[in-house]
Length: 268
Image 1 (cartoon, rainbow, N blue to C red):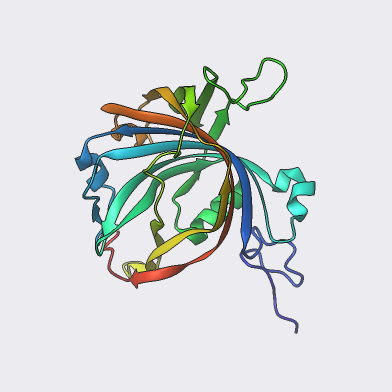
Image 2: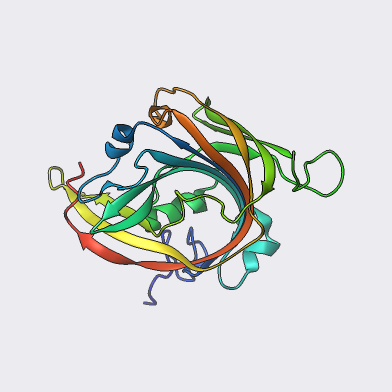
């Protein structure tokens, strides 16, 4: 009998039905980033052991909207756009592990199943959501990338709006923020199939871009609102002080990560 194939389920004789292809995964996207400060205690409660608060600016948060086109190494998905295009919104904080500062995604919503599957592999806590952001365009009423341009962004899940922002660009910038500027420290968790046996998979992993290119970042100001919802906790990262907002177009390749340690998170 031939083996079943596929990077992730469903595995079949050909592997063509697999929800995601094997890495590398390539991305082109427009990113809107809103950085602000919250109560560091609200960040700390989202960091399982052995992660600790960042030494510098421990309450800093980045809420990021991204409009992506993505593909495997072949690039075939770009010519079948339903397999390539998706949107996401995610909250990033910083943390410390063995003296090094990491970024960590603590909440994230996407609008396609293949993006959720990739997140499970990478350690991103992805859930389904409804995500929208203003797209720039050189003609018509859409904003250009220039001083005074205004972009809106919204996030909803389970019929409830969770966040909305309006970003006004001010000037070109040397950076597109500092909160999401480090390697990611994520946990990969999977409960045992046997009740009471804890986690079958419990890994702290590091990952980041295998390669990166980006356009000119722009900095500006943001009006950001977060909303309560019965099954979401983003609003606990309440806005206490705005930092800045950014717009940037980027290209990224993700091609795996490395194990930092296993079996020590104490997650339930």
